[in-house]
Image 1: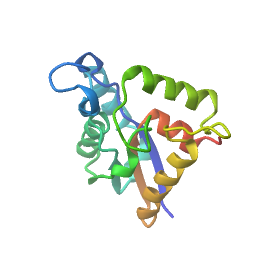
Image 2 (image 1 turned 180 degrees about the vertical axis):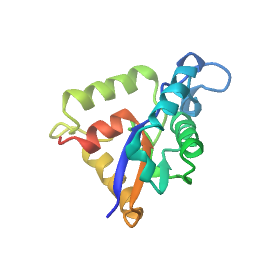
Image 3 (image 1 turned 30 degrees about the vertical axis):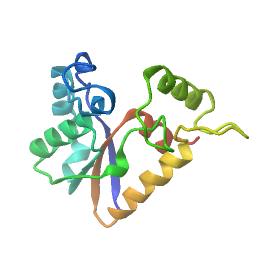
Length: 163
């Protein structure tokens, strides 16, 4: 069974949000800021990562950019796995929701500790849904000795911590 090292992507270039083509769902294409690039170069120095055989990453720009830096610094192959995407404010139709609705969904996620309230019809992805999809991803890489998983803070919070 593999050891999985989870790495949160570096700081994204947030001022790019809403500019150029970084609008709506394309927001997820934003890459790292200069500070985020430095953060990931520092992360690559962590001795625990030296034994990894593979890097798997979320398809979002900030995670891809982070994984590419790690791949280069550590000379390790990188693969994109769409199952490592960020938490979804709408896991039913996969629509990119307006900020106010997405923020309300996130507030509900946190207030309810990752669980849909009993009897409520929620669009947002629950902790159990996130955990299920991530565990399906990890299962595909279980025969490696060590794998670096580059993904997102919310995902890590609800998958790695008891809920």
